[in-house]
Image (spheres, one colour):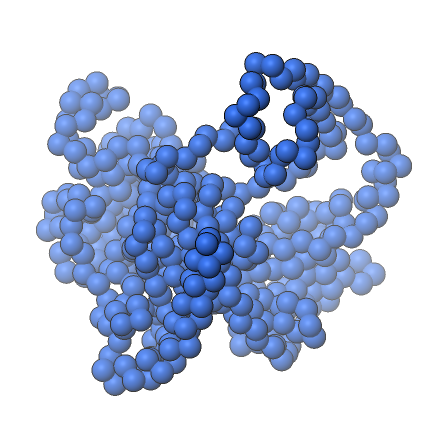
Length: 443
């Protein structure tokens, strides 16, 4: 990984660690005169007195083949894997990510016919699977619904499915972290589950652009719940309260369920954090072209207005609806390539161009909710590379979404305000305690 020191205005991307899958290990040995105990972190800082020109570095690369005996013994070992459910996932895609063999995937799907759990794959939840190194599935469990367990076990080469209610014990956790390189690196260092990290980005999706706005030194405190069964963690719950300090500004959110059953995240004053439109249709990306009246078109080779925002991202990156609405158009349209146009309440429309493909079942007239995946990044139409072209239209005219005041959701209803204040008082206190502990550690 290439590391570049941060300036105060540098942007931070979410990063995930990759997995080693090859059967040949390549060792990199670096020999130098710097004592090993002088390196404190993954990115060590050498003392100023040492000249890098004086350090002799020798790179030795060796291929070490794993013995066949070791390979055979590993194939008989079993491992527990966990896979987070993503938006648009089916059990087939999850089995593929778990590298389950084709034979066992077919057997699993046949045994799981009619399963309620497999129709309730909730994004953010976790599936646990026990398997061998060669892809044999031994057991898979998934906690779903109202404290129910889906269990698939393999016995004598046959899969047996059970779905039953269980009792789960809840625990509340408080964790804090500081952004040094990326959001996910910080949450990993703090021991925060990925599901909670993703909830954090969703909660503040209308407040913070997690690509452009993050800075080194930003910090967060999160209060969340987990559930266990017989002392073993079963699943991660929801974020109950969170504070994110971005560029010196504090953003706080408290979870609350109203008397009419509606739930969401609110500021301690009762203002809803949910906006009618998300700041970005992609969770993590970078802006490659902004809204402007004059841009040199890379294909037409002429200067013309660019009435939208381009987000560069790899092909296949999920594209989310920035607001709830009705599909007005879904198909191919000239320079836009594969295009989705959503009609929202009142005078608003959004457009998503250059898609590689559409989400399954997306068609004209279908209703989508804010955050639903409607397609995937591509380079169809007049595009030089994979990116999303996003437009906000008001009364049929393209407008710069970064400069338009967009409507917000209503605050806590007066009838629920007293209950909200009583229920959230302890959560706000927890955030304050963690903030004070953080500042005390810096003194």
